[in-house]
Image (cartoon, rainbow, N blue to C red):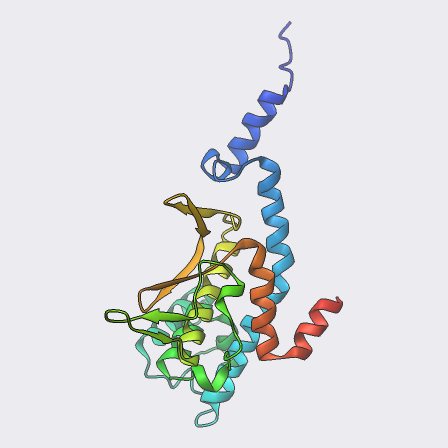
Length: 232
């Protein structure tokens, strides 16, 4: 008679590695931390989603003033390619189209950010004068250097570009279920893994400051929305 193989802790560990992949689990201190990471992503999702939806509608309000059907009438080649991908995915064949708001909801966040920058709408959409990047990591600064011994504070347009890049970074890493807790080490110092670079200056968000970063951005967009999320 063939004996049934017992499930030992070692076998269970091996099974979990098969299911979750050794490469993924190797980026965590333990399997428990992997699930703590997923729970954390769940916790920040309402804030990310609210910011993203708000940015889509703020952009639509700006561009829709001149043309309410600006998406289908666009001359932006990057947006045109995105619409082709959406139509292919949704099996839309010309002359059929989705509605304006369906397209608005389906274009990627990266495209939304591209359009904000391409149309120079940073200052029109967000006022980030009160944003202090040092709140999100001690390695950050609110200025950049140019030339020998010369520096300049980030303008609002610079801050918006930085914040939108960080938002996209956090969102993409979250929804690919990557390890949000990861850091990088250089010369014995620890730096955030969630970073962006502008004017040769790195700005990052430490994992324990992600909620604060998203709260500050939400508060800039609408304090009322932030208050509602915190009450839920």
